[in-house]
Image (cartoon, rainbow, N blue to C red):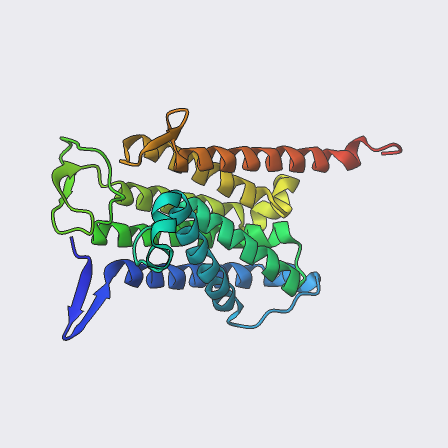
Length: 272
């Protein structure tokens, strides 16, 4: 693999480079979603700048990276307290669930600042988040940072002898699996957000349903992929990521049920 790109005296980490590409891809998708929702948002009295999507992703991306790093180091508190500064500012080791928490907190802040309903705002951001995660996983593949899977004899198995966490065995290229899976999820979420579908389909798609689908679909994907990852087991034989994925699935399911219940209230109200 290629942990660094060497340009003269410069050594550019490929992981960091792909994170930058992922943020750019996310910003473009978010901006496209804002643009196609412009009539709807204008009716709500919301006016956004032409480059609003890039500003939003910039803030949420930084918060997500910080959350991912903090969550990762707190998974091994002994190592963290032994060398806290080195652990915090290492270029490697980021946890998906920590990134999700950091990104959500930033988006809650931004929704309040923009005076948009937070569920609608999260719907708009969900396809961009899934696509950005997919692209970011290519950085894990290039750097060979230990996010690969268990040994395999399948023809597409890969080895990472020059990776940050090297292995000469042929293993499951799980970052590549996640790249394709999360791109598929991003496409599904994008289609759910199509104006004609929101207008003619379930009321759940008018605010919160797409975000709930994001929580459920990404949670399922990450839960399943962990079975062939090399992460250590902790809770009831599950990895930390699987435990976090179950929380994501549960929250998404609860949100979907709440939206379904709310959509029925007007129909069952007295006098209807």
